[in-house]
Length: 288
Ligand code: PAF
Image (cartoon, rainbow, N blue to C red; front, side):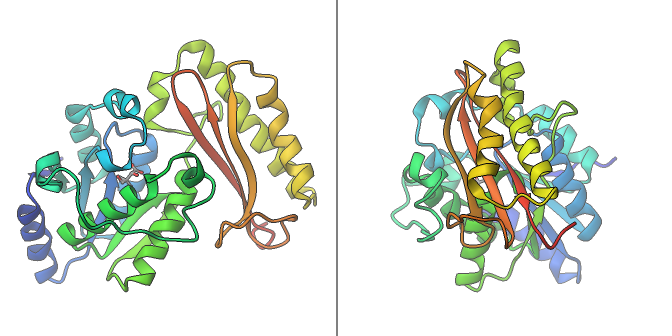
């Protein structure tokens, strides 16, 4: 397994991917904030199966954090990340410094996708998505990938970044990849490492609720109220779990819906004492 090239500057990343593309090869990009887990690994493996070279960016993007404590405690594990990325098929790691990405501290230009960002995560984390779309636009500029891979775990982020790429005619295909769970159902997240054993046990109520809603949907239940009640019940009996929201939304517009007759997503965010967790299930009547 060859060591991935370590790129730390925007010009270095651009030179690497331009040279690859000049040879007629395809570049995949997997944008991450590091602390790579099996979910990231699946994105890198997918990228490696579809592209000739895979760059993984590792950058804890300060402008998408609404809580200084969350930013300060975000796990940073570059050595382990390098190994995991290499094993999954990454050929380059792009690890810019904050100064490289934001030489003036805060950029004066932000990319904002209106309409999709005021709800759900956006309503609870003001400015979060402007930070995500701005850094993604910068990463796409730096790496000029043919494809960029995003997990459905952060479903709203996936929709927002896809819409940005579409609105701005960006020459990158955004590839959605399935959410990956631990064997016991917990959705993989870099923040899971912060959970105590007790929190982790109670956090399982989130996926248990969503699975119950999904099972009911598969049996023909389409009403939002009924699906949400099933998803909410286990979380309500977990004393450490505080839901921020639980919504059934249209899979494309993210508008709340009364029924899941068209492709919809049941999305939730739950605050545990040490981490805020996101999870969702896609309820698509056309997928059986
Ligand atoms: O999902 C993430 O890890 C981040 O939001 C992303 C897409 C890498 C942008 O910083």
